[in-house]
Amino acid sequence: MHKELITFTENLVKNLVKQPDMVSVQEFGGDDETILLEIIVHESDMGAIIGRSGKMANAIRTMVQAYAFLHKLNRVKINIDSF
Image (cartoon, rainbow, N blue to C red; front, side):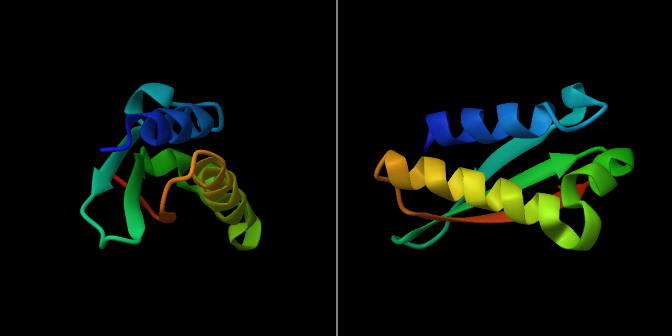
């Protein structure tokens, strides 16, 4: 489990939403070369996380992948969902 990566992603997302207590980041089993993260936010915060034309979601993915690269972790795939 990559706790530092999860904490970084969680802190990044919590600063972008109106309901930070509802943010959850979980790691799921990927293959040997990929880390699979799922970001779950409140339904009302989905617009803030995805952004116009998906630009915010792409920026989040870029930041998380850069963090993983700097810490010599595997490639990261991110799934964003709401509840």
